[in-house]
Image (tube, rainbow, N blue to C red; front, side, top):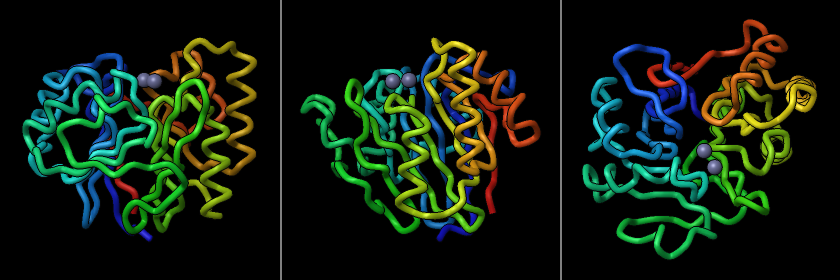
Length: 234
Ligand SMILES: [Zn+2]
Ligand SMILES: [Zn+2]
């Protein structure tokens, strides 16, 4: 189990600190006692590196990259990160195309598994767009970090709960609800509450409506996040 972990948003549609840059896409820097990992890489590598520099995160120290799915707004920055650190290892869905797996060290993920001590992948999920989600097993409960949640945020949380049988401390990332109607968003927020999700931090493709409704339903347990935002869980 992980006792201390820090997550910082380095690429997102939303901005929380002026002076940084927002753009459609997502990337989060995850730092623990033993690990420095980038979750997704945003779309524009140069923008990603500019944000990281301003946030005092050294890309040369990134050891692992977790790629949720093949969409360009999550994988586009990979080349720039590789230029900074060609030796990093990536965790990629097995279904990635040959082109997307070229020029770096990677491990293919297909099923639910522990990728490093305390860090899990849901394994490949979904049909139209195949995606893996990162789960970190902390002493406070599970942290679930999604790219776009194309397989459905409820399905993803369900899998994490079923496999690890632990309370869920925080679900963070793209919930992919930007084109969903209010009624559906309310249903999903209520469903997550019912599954005892403690805190939520929807960003990227979640949409303004979802952010408003999740805020209403989760109250103080809703985090309004974007580029520049970070949290320490310990
Ligand atoms: Zn996306
Ligand atoms: Zn996507």
